[in-house]
Image (tube, rainbow, N blue to C red; front, side, top):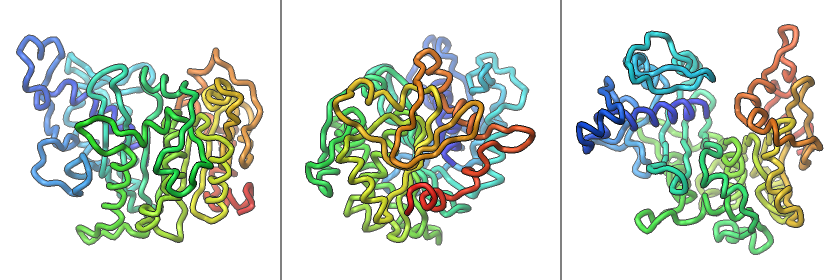
Length: 390
């Protein structure tokens, strides 16, 4: 269901930039320059003006469903179009009549899952170095799962964070691991550093508050206390995925409301190295205790999963979890607690790093049959049993 968050994110970005409902302070000249238009029923997907909040801790005032996203796009199709890559863009002419990719994909999601986006946090009010972390949280009643989804590296600040080579032990990790665990300072700052004087809570604290609210709230007769927690993300989002999953697995506060019989599961894609040997050692300890699982998907030729290891070779960074390594002409190779050897190609990094390349290789078919059907047919528990012996 993380794809619902990504579709919602690109749609929301366009609407906030071009809707007259959310650009009321602009002069007529500014509105013309920014191509401000009147969308039909923007409250279907933007909750700023809603009177009542579903959860006390969330930025969203009410849940966003796939059906609501689909209804909004269908009513406002004229203002959107697909670019050559199939990505949603604003159509200032307001004349599109073609069915959009987002309509097709969201319709399938709505038919397949009973799920809501309950939180969406995007502080990207400005460009460049002021951009912040984006994440969404989804409750999936069909699979009885709560998912935190992070976006990937998106701008200049993100890449500067990726290339930082300093280590630190944030207080949230020191609480359960002492000083034995060092993690990448840039990734740590995203989660654990106070963002501004106005906003006293860190992103980690915000996510923790929402999760606690959802797991302990039985409003509307819905009890989510036994739902599994999944965390997922690509690139920078992949690093944050494993870092958040690791920290929640050790946090006394989180363990008080998370279901004790179910591990926190991280599904990372193209994640850089996140921590040193002490981090990997503690990560493995949580795995053996049944608190944590990590499926780490990488793409042959992608340089990003090697970034920190390349820029700081003496730091002895380690990648934990079960690695599913994708190839262009053969099925995925799988290994536990290893970085599988391959040649990172900086020339093709954009092509091999992006989510479309991961998706196409993972779901590749030959003679009408999925090449990776063996790994795709297995549960996380089955993968850990076979490849990690747990």
